[in-house]
Every structure is written in C-alpha cells, then in structure tokens.
Length: 79
Length: 225
Ligand SMILES: Nc1nc2c(ncn2[C@@H]2O[C@H](COP(=O)(O)OP(=O)(O)OP(=O)(O)O)[C@@H](O)[C@H]2O)c(=O)[nH]1
Ligand SMILES: [Mg+2]
Image (cartoon, rainbow over all chains, first blue to last red; front, side, top):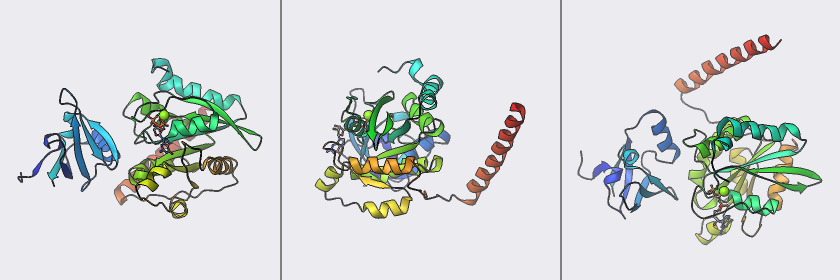
C-alpha cells in the first residue's frame, strides 16, 4: 500500500482524504455509494464518539457517522 | 411518536394505504435526505407542530396533516429522511414503502440548496418510481449566505419536473410549492422525468426482470378471474 493510502477509519480527525476504492460488496457497498462515497470524493474526519466508534465524517456537505466496520472498507488517500 | 412494530413495515404501509383509499383527498408525500427541512415545510403548510431539529433522524414515523388549496384538501405525509430508496433502517423503510407502494398523488422531494449534488441521488431514484414529483429546493437563504446560486429553471428543465426554491423557515416560496403540487397532482402539469440510462448489462437485466414481473402479474390476474 502507498504511504498515504489507508482505510478511512484510520485517518486522523481534522484530516481530509480522497476515496480511491470501496472494498465492500452488495448492500453495504450500495449504501456507501448512496451516501455519496464514490471514487474521488473528498471526505473529512470530524470527530470520534467517546468510544472511538462510530466516527463522524463530512461527506458532500452532510455530517454522517460511520462505524469502523463500514469505514474500514473505504480506502482513501490522505490529502 | 415512538418507533414500535406497529408503526413500521407492513402494518404502517397498510395504515398509509388506508388513508388514501378512504377519502377523496389529495395525498402528498414529503420525502428527502435527512435534515433538509421536510418537517419545517410540513409545519408551515399544515400549521401543525411536527418535531424539527438540526440533527438527522428527528422524524422516525410519519406525521399527517392537512392544508387547503383551491378548495381541495391536501393530506401531507411527512416522511423520515433517507439517502436512498434502498432502505437500511426501519425509518428508511417507511419512507421507501410510502413512496414506492402507497401511490401518493404527488411526492415532494425536499432538497438542501447548500449541498444539492448529494441530494440529487435520491431525486433520481424517486423519479424512477413515479413521475408525479415536485422538487423543493429548500434552505435557499443558507445557500445565498454561502454564495451558492441555483438556477431553478435549468434544474427543472434538466429533471423534467417542477422545481421550486423555498425558505421553509419564513415561508418563502411555499405558495409556489402548493401551486406546483396542485398542478402535478391534478395532471395540469405533465412532467417528463429525466431517465437515467445504465450500462448495457444493467439495462438488459432490468428488461429481463420487467418481462418476468409482467408475466407474474398476468398470472395473478388469471387467478383473480
Ligand atoms: N435557514 C433555514 N433553516 C431551515 C429551513 N428549513 C428548515 N430549516 C432548519 O433546518 C433544521 C432541520 O429541519 P427539519 O424540518 O427538522 O428537517 P427534516 O428534513 O424534517 O429532518 P429529518 O426528519 O430528521 O430528516 C431545523 O433546525 C429547521 O429550523 C430554511 O429554509 N432555512
Ligand atoms: Mg423531519
């Protein structure tokens, strides 16, 4: 894996990243696409919940909380 | 209103269908992404007080209210916010079932003017289900504040359905919205929704499934006779 490429749940709060790949399939993949997570979409990690999961992200103008399980299947490149 | 078994899924759908079948009222669904101002539009039009908030997931069951326009009674149904018709939760299922199966006379899709693009996914999905749609571009004041300009006319031409810009908080644009809803529900405005063409594999598969559904339908009709 390239240095700046990682699953979304690992990017630090306050950082933005660009979606490069979705590794989920079926319904969960479709759900991510419906949230606007298509390739090249810029996502910002906003804040973690007290337990660290879920994490709130800014996705195309909406704040959306994703569980680590979901976010780990979104591969991004830090920008 | 709590989210009980009674208010979700099949029983909710049945309840929803009943309102329409029992009256000559015009049934209008209010759909849209979470937090776009559906309940605010609902409250402004009906004078009711459906809970509103600035965090998503406020509306967890449908609320119903009435308004009069041109001597007609319109029954407005405030649906929970959803990003997609492919439901992921009980609330999203309510929205999907109503839009897809309750056959409202018109569906108003409330979209957020400050992030229009992300809202258009649901608009396109709804346009695939019904052509009786009015798009309400809400939060126009917020968009203006953020220096976002929206060409309502062009959007309407591109989507093939009426588009109205509103500020549901102060009621701006709502009379125009009611007018468009009247027009669409009474077939005075004929819409021509944009049709998304998918790649060949998908289109072919859709065609196959449609053929099968038509066949099933005619079988069911035979049994009925
Ligand atoms: N500035 C501004 N704020 C608005 C407008 N419409 C709604 N709001 C505010 O936006 C927030 C969300 O509004 P709601 O009506 O609860 O949104 P909703 O679509 O019903 O939300 P869900 O039911 O959770 O999906 C509230 O704080 C409203 O006061 C508008 O046109 N302009
Ligand atoms: Mg609401």
